[in-house]
Length: 297
Image (cartoon, rainbow, N blue to C red):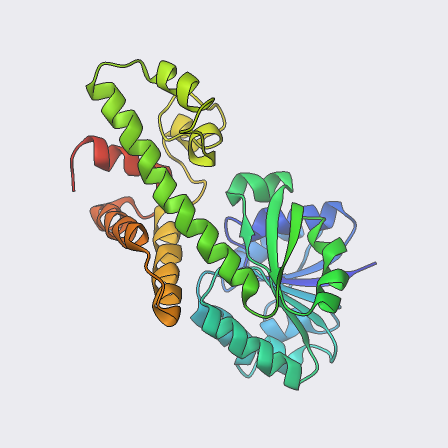
């Protein structure tokens, strides 16, 4: 039986742990919010009161945190993963963070004989709950093949993206496109309403023609068109707007590091900055349709 330490029990981490437990894994859990670990103990998880306690004896360590600074801290602090995990443990970071931090941690892990993968996810809370996440994985192919059976307990599509940092690169590029496409869909529906066009008719046309994209057909920001979309639940996330903004900033940093021009990405970052600054950081990112429709830009 695989013994897993899972660190970070927020909106994504909690359902990912539940799927590991359902698959028969033994799971130690840790979060700075100790109550989150205690809540999962009612489902069979083993709560830990420290990072060191959580990783001791684990075969696999998984982190799901919000920032590169947090990941670096839990890896390198005195009570952290790299100090207390057993040699040759498989370490999977599923956080969405900057490439430079990821590559630094890969190099550090290799020096101490830990097998690290960067494996951010796409699919949001709904995908985490359903076990249908997409994992995009960077690191050695040997380590990827070892991790794949574990990732398959939490996801539906597991993609080997390449060497260290390429999982993060794939996530950054994907979410750059997602942020831009969501704004485009919002603008299209807002224009349709002002022109007097029935939004159901626009959906019928565009979802079957050249305007089709995931932001429309799977996550439509206009209520009443895609039953499972957050727009039908008062824009409850989902994927919080502040996290989309974080990923768009990661895109800006990555583009600057290689001299890539991403003008639409820059404008999307500016719009999501306004949206978050208006107090909408913790609602779903598709809720930006309301800011655009009300001309609050």
